[in-house]
Image (cartoon, rainbow over all chains, first blue to last red; front, side):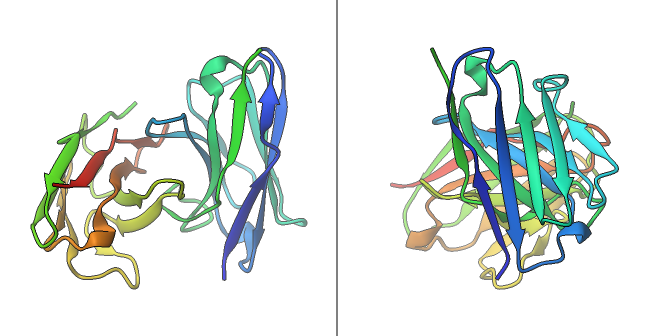
Length: 121
Length: 108
């Protein structure tokens, strides 16, 4: 069964950095684009960033452009999100979500269980 | 950025009733529109893609329709497990993907 498992969340001070990871299994990792989607407590879903199956194309929401960097290591079936200059408004559960092809950026047919990032002093 | 507006914000219905959820886009997304269901403490679950295609295994009481800027998710007869929050998402934009604000379907 396809699985996506996030890790790396935690408490960080404003201005700090954090690196999230997402491990995929039971599918050909490089054949699928993957995105990060976040959900602030009690709020709706917000797409954050996406990367193509090869890793050659990346996209970011305006709210994180220049602060977050998405990358992937297909040899290790792993996706990462490096988050710098964190702000209180970045507090959310972060999900990794698999798109249906290597190049399409959506829809998302498999999601991880999420990892909580809390930005607070 | 394409803005998706979902209505109503909350739908109060009884089991067995019909639910009609709306999603309106600020500009055409063709048929690049998906619907997700989310229950408390769980990740979203894909229901509908391409505006009207059901994922494998989805009961046929769920149906999607629409194109361009106006889309509808219909649940023909609500089952107890259908009470949840539903989000639409457009994935056709060359820039940001966006989600609607969600519609909560609650038990009346």
